[in-house]
Image (cartoon, rainbow, N blue to C red; front, top):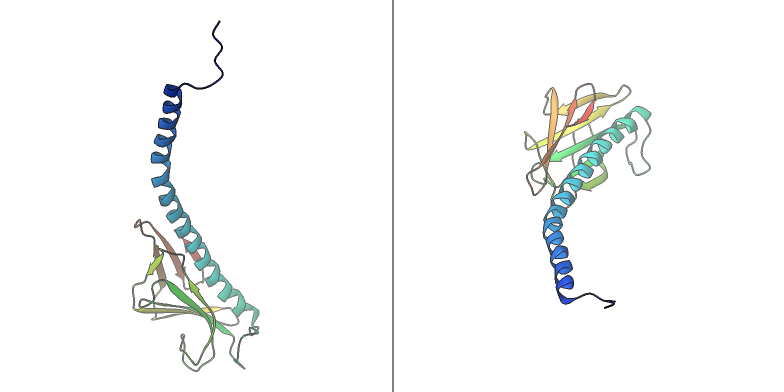
Length: 169
């Protein structure tokens, strides 16, 4: 009887062909999945940062980084000129909205690579005024929609209304 202990050349080539086929199917989907995951993470991070500004306002405590003496209004600022980052700040000045150098920047948050946002205006600020906190949108609108997009044109929308409800769609 003939006893075989190895693979023949034909069996080896079939195994290699199957592996190549699987790689060709999986690799393109991997990049798409990474982009979708980056979009999901960025949307969640943005919603958390908006909620963080609300919580800091409700606590009515100044940040350790703050140079403000009286105002504990926190906000989030978006500018169409920088569609890959936003600013979380303490509003120190007499005017409402983020103004560098008058206000303290707590964080300048860069979105993940390949993720950008779109807004309806050239600049939008969400400012939370203690003690409730009352929310002010600059410019004055009923709701703010921030659309995050990835390179594959997939999108997530973060909607914030005047009651302070933050929603990811």
